[in-house]
Image 1 (cartoon, rainbow, N blue to C red):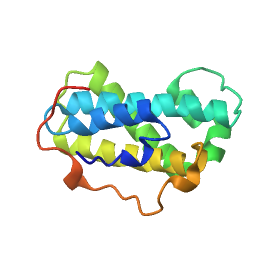
Image 2: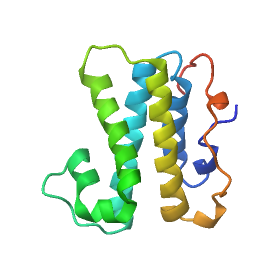
Image 3: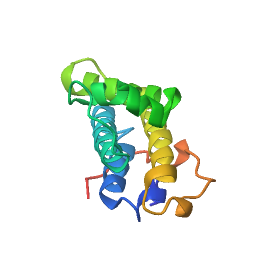
Image 4: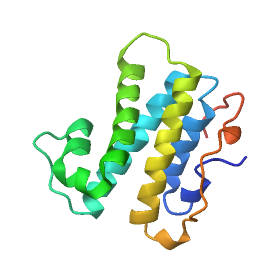
Length: 149
């Protein structure tokens, strides 16, 4: 099966697996999809702090890391906004009982894709190997979920 996240399978296989899980569950289990997406953002932000040697913020949680001036300068306001949208949706999915809509999970996946693509193009070991033609395609999101690999 082709995934919207195939472009990182070589550089970041573990992250690629997590992204694929988020993608697989969009329609069958939107809550799980959003939680996996948030998990990816957290792992990727930790990686970016290490690789870019950013100073740790006042508090060592995802919200503080995303909104720290050094990270905002690194990623820019648009990407920080996307990552924060994924973070907030993941927190709601994990800690609140309200339903997570399929369309909401699809939008979270789209934001995740943009964030992961930017990171891969700028901070993977081989950024030149990441195609400039990568686009999010909702048609690649499976109609039904499958068991995690």
